[in-house]
Amino acid sequence: MSFALTPTILLVAAGIFLLRIGDTSLDTIRMLFVVRGRKGLAWALAFGQALLFVVAISTVLSHLDNAFTILAYAAGFATGNVVGMFIEERMAIGFMQFTIISSNRGAVVASQLRQNGFAVTEIPARGQNGTVTMLQTNVKRKDMGNIEKIVLDADPAAFVTLDETRPVRRGYWRA
Image 1 (cartoon, one colour):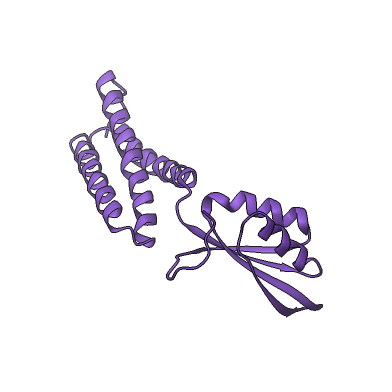
Image 2 (cartoon, one colour; image 1 turned 45 degrees about the vertical axis):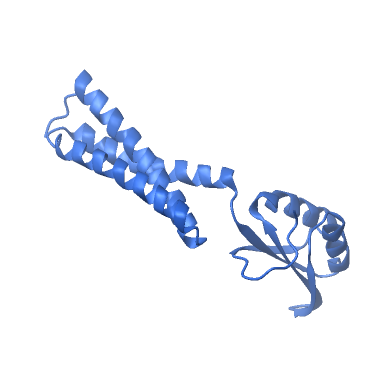
């Protein structure tokens, strides 16, 4: 195996690196659409991802004599995961369920959320040290930062968890 870095190998390695970034980014995003039940988009992304993968792997296999092509393949895969996650965060597709537990300011948090146009369900509950209010609200992912700010402004001591959710039946969703 050679470690010679010629201009040709440099171009081949760069191409493999970029193909793997594209392929793995599409794969990361595709999986999120699969989980969310978006069949058409998942199919299209899988098709593009498979094309890029075949070109990248065939290029690596035809240049197995040089370690830089293998390193480019691995580096592109690793980088593609991060790029795919970054793209998915920017897209902010889907819905999230916030569960907020407040020891003594639950009504204030609920009121602030409602004043900002979010639906919220208040549930009286018992915590380790007594009665608490548990609040649940389902929001579009793009509203996550806004919800967090509203909650922490109203109750900085609130315990907040977040889960990805998929709507099944209609209800109130902020427009």
